[in-house]
Length: 266
Image 1: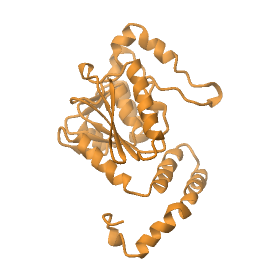
Image 2: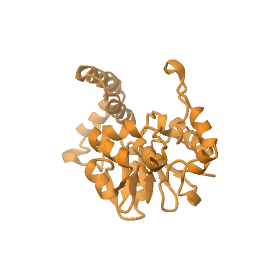
Image 3: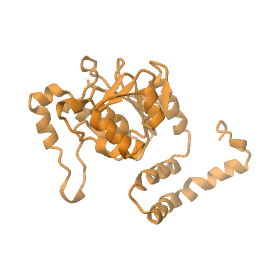
């Protein structure tokens, strides 16, 4: 099995497990990843996911041996978006990269997250990297294009000029640089990325989820909208949460919980 799903209460950890190829993704693995994240989305008790690889690698990108054999090209060509923007959207070549989930996903990156592996990490809401982990558009060497959102998400994270430099040179982006430019949010010691990501996931899972998901959705949807349109969308998405969660949350605060910025007793 190339994809393993593990549950710890409200947190689901989804692991890529093809260590013989540094967790590179072939078509079968892409299908498994897509299905695993759809299952996470559909499970009512699952609130946050952590996405990582096994045995010291996040993901070395698409498995180029399948592309060389012709299977990969046929797989990519079969994944055309439906005409007129219909549903369902098929997997991306790497699997879940086209999914727009309602729940957060945190990437826990050890070792290489290169080419399509960079794209999978960028698909997540944010990234925890081990100090010796790295990104890089290594597929630049072989004429393999980014088809899993790399040219869309990276400029939105780090700015167009910096993104183009990373994309066009294909160079290695080590963890300390990724943190500095906004390509990741945490850098931790070697071997600690999964534990840190899962701790963050459990913390996020404590919060009222309707509010959290409404704010997350608004942050994504504001891209490309004019300010007024974005503000209207934020209001429309958040308003239903007021009576659903905010009133009871305010009552807990009025009763003495969470004073002075305390996140422990909420």
